[in-house]
Length: 508
Image 1 (cartoon, rainbow, N blue to C red):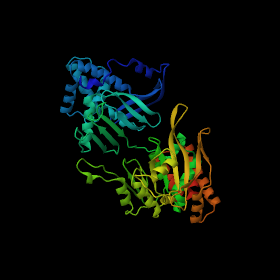
Image 2: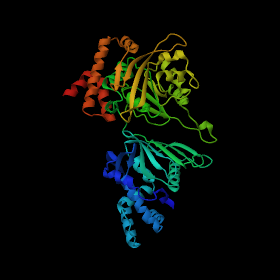
Image 3: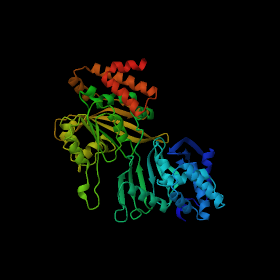
Image 4: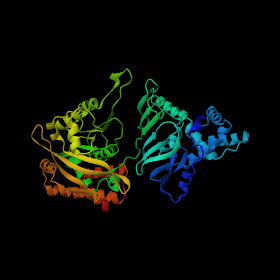
């Protein structure tokens, strides 16, 4: 049946009712997504305990394709559009209209069908719609004739009404492989690469997946989240944000704290690292090291390094995290950010922290501070306990269920204390999540605060006065919904240059 393998046997009447707000469903969100010349509406719908990402145009496209299959017109139209060099939406629409008149066939939904061919020719087909949705983090094709799933920033995991057949999934994978100049076949059944926009794509062939070939695309965010977004989401509050600002910056660079952000899969570790990196002093030389290029720091002096996987028969082609961390130490960095610490690079990062590179940070998969420390001390990281003296804070962020929703929350900020011994790891909880308040509460006395006061030559009262000034600025941004990266960065930079003038501008 070709491309129509992707269609349901009959139109899904139950799902058609979703857009009519029937009593069993709830429309959670509605917006439009643009893909170059065309625009498609998207509905986020909750029904029967599941969340759906529905594109009405897709249902109309499937209806049109069924009609075309009756006369085997699908490939004929595609071939002629390609041969004629039709590239704009209007050209394709006019051609389909003339085609229907010439062959005397009734093609329904010509406008939507033209959108489909527009997305098909030289593009990734219907996947282009979710790939161009700035609200999505991930797009997942789970094999042949399975619904495509997406991970929404606000609504989490959603099932779409896009269903791709074998021909289309294989075509998309071949297009991606060609685009990135890589090979994927039965001999090399896995592909891991970056798209030109920075998105990371992983693909597998049907040789190793019983569902059929799969595609997982981790989108590169065109509009990264900022601290104001996290305050809006309830991930942290203004008070905690002001503390972390001081800690990352180190009170105008006097003593930046070294930190590790820990959490489970999808908890928002890299997002939090990106948010906190913005608090670095505006004039510092920063080196980021990642597998997937997600960190976006709008400072002038930033170098972004990424790993490179080995190729079949070419093990020397591989560049690991550890290679990059060691190399970064030779690049005169003020601070180093590591996207995800997994192996030997943990030791190299701690070496950086122990050799005067204050303000270093990274993320680590762990469910608690204790688990994070255990992972650091165990193979393959093998960090000597005494080296953890240079680590100031462990920030624990996790996904929790609350009121039927999945939320991301900072559950604790733990200070690692200098132990003086070779095996003992001392720590104290500074901020702890309260489920009753759905927020963080300050608990313990912070040794880092005493250290930064001593180095900067200020009293604790002056440090807290400065923190309150930062809280005023963050509160202003929050109340006025100033949340875009470049805008938040501008206010932070102005504060770092002259705090009093920056606050005066808020009331002028």
